[in-house]
Amino acid sequence: MKRGLAAQFTLAIAVVVLIAIGLISIMSNVLINKEFEKYASEQREMQSQKIVSNLDWQYDSVTGEWDTSYVHGVGMSALYDGYVIRVKDSAGDVVWDAENHDMSLCGRIMDEISERMDKIRPNLHGGFVTMEYDLTQSGAIIGTVDIQAYGPYFFSENDSRFMTALNAVLLVIGLLSLAFSFACGRLLARRISRPIIKAAHIATQVSEGNFSIRFNGKTRVRELAELVAAVNNMAESLDRQESLRRQLTTDVSHELRTPLSAVSTHLEMMIDGVWEPTKERLQSCFDEIGRITGLVEEIEKLGQIEADNLSLDKSPTDLLELAGAAFHAFESEGAKKGIAMDVSGESSIVPADRDRMRQVLANLLSNAIKYTPQNGQVRITVEDTPQSGVLVIEDSGIGIHAEDIPLIFERFYRTDKSRNRGTGGAGIGLTIAKSIVEAHGGSIEVESKPGKGSRFVVILGKA
Image 1 (cartoon, helix red, strand yellow):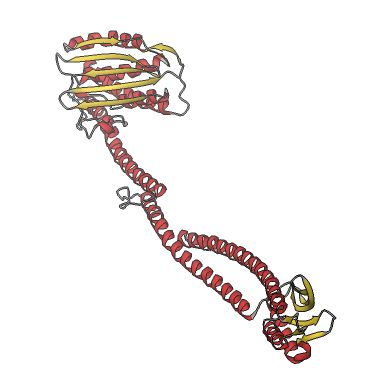
Image 2 (tube, one colour):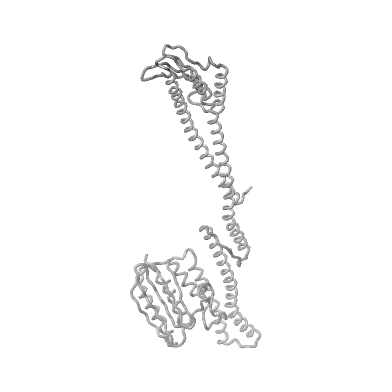
């Protein structure tokens, strides 16, 4: 069963946090216990030294007697703390012995400590051991004390309660942290998954033909913002392509219907005997069929140029020389309309296919002359930079509206919606020009204002 992104993300965060909390808790527990064991061991030694220090002053060197009542107090206090003592004088005679005083109490306390340590530290395998210390006064030994205590260390009841409480606190902190991380992970997962789910929904809608749908909303995550932008760009591009596809169908049918209708009408009239099949009428049919053939050839040429296997015969090419050749080829056509044409600039050598680039210049110059009114201007400029060669074709023609500029390189697109043959061709020339330039690894740009002319810029790299 497949889980949703939010569920997987939440689970992943919970698992990571659980592992992190587990590791932290284990390490904290180990370190705290280690330090506490060290503390308990030091306390055991310090308490033993304290007992010795207290007993040192219970011997009267003048009378040679021990203050047994005080020794009894020290011994009982030590016993309740878990230390069983036996005090002997310098001759080895017992002054005070906790076991002789109250054997049952000693046994009970020792059993309680053993049970406690077996429960808290089952792997310690400890037991009661006896340590002997000298009792001294002014550097002289006045006796000894045997201190019996659980070793290597032991915890008092307060120590045990502290450790239990500490472990409980660590457990509670771990559970609260896990619950908090689970809630935060779920919230974060929802914030991340919501735009992804919405993007997937939009992509599904687009795949079903709804190209008008868009992703409305913003996200602060950079990658998600890029995803949103990509989805919107995809939908917009497909919407535009769908519009162009419909327009392409209309345009192609228009381009074919006009000459076919003319040929069909002429032939029908001649077959019915209404018209005589004169040379002029047959020539008219032939011309219309030539228009259809030319359109098919242009489509085939475009298909060949846009194919992945378009081969270019590149060689060092001077763009200024190409511009001059194109100028001479179209000079007479411009002269018919009184258009002033000139070529200027500097030599720029780039690796290019001469024939293909001549085709680009021919298409651009043909359009410039066609859309420039009587007595206008067409100028070709060549610029050379360290990285590229630049061809600029400017005219003082009718210009292009801003909404048409992004579409003029599309197949069969013409700014003249009536598709009047007198104002343009089939709308493939610029598409071919762009395809050739991009096949060279270059780019073609256009700047234009209605009534003021257009400026086409072709950039070809030198590498």
